[in-house]
Length: 395
Ligand SMILES: Cc1ncc(COP(=O)(O)O)c(C=O)c1O
Ligand SMILES: [Zn+2]
Image (cartoon, rainbow, N blue to C red):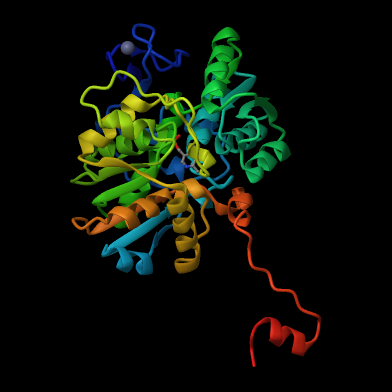
């Protein structure tokens, strides 16, 4: 295995610490020879079941038992949308409640193997929560930069309890991302674990492997929210590798969803040959994907185009309605960003797909404010049967 520039193809050894290509400045990826990965049958559960597809020493792993999340059939919503087999891959079942744990177990394992003393990230919340937990597990210092006042309260609470050092940046996520990159380049001791880090994405690709193993084949379509666009890139890489390894014989279309006022990737995809992907003031209730300058934009565009997929937007109202739909019709409580794929399906339909997987990226409890801001109807009663029946409108 080695590192490879996604744009110009320059190679770097696996043990070299760099985040972007020294030649052209673009993002890197891990190149692996899948023919070396298929020798024996897979064993174990979760992310490390796929250890031979991962670029770190599994014997020294930092793990909280991540991955192996449920792939749940959503029959009621499926029939509403006219999709015969609609599934939700519920990443809220991970140790810190989001898909980030898949990447962090691999990223923090690498940090330990490099001898790093501190790990850092910029975050809309979930990366911070995950990084703080895995750093705690490994005994490393965790530095997290968050956009001031724009992170869901549950995610901040997670970082606090795990001992993350939280710096609130007076700016948005993109400002935090820029300055944390500067910090990690300036001081060699701080290992950067945003999704610009290709080792982290290697962990996230296992989501694709799990879907294939659960279904026994590839789905027709995968729909997921895009923010920094690491996840869509990682999952597409996973599907391609599983096909190259002979585990599946076709590939899914990848559909990326963004919030209406935070959709730089949808805009870039509308151009034939975009050379920049940027939006100044992204805004959405789905704070996890409130990102204007996605670092993995080139990879995401490739994932959408190579897979024959597409990208689209949904409004905040559509996102919140989809979040309620999943909770009330399927019993799954996901955070707003994670409901964006369902919102997209409700809005656009998908008549030519039999099997569709929506990636529910994070747990609903992370962002209770998003639910409670819409004045919930609580009824009050005296502690008597008569009063209770009156409150419930029962005769
Ligand atoms: C819940 C949730 N969904 C989606 C995303 C977007 O993932 P990516 O930045 O890899 O596109 C994030 C990123 O923070 C997230 O926390
Ligand atoms: Zn390059």
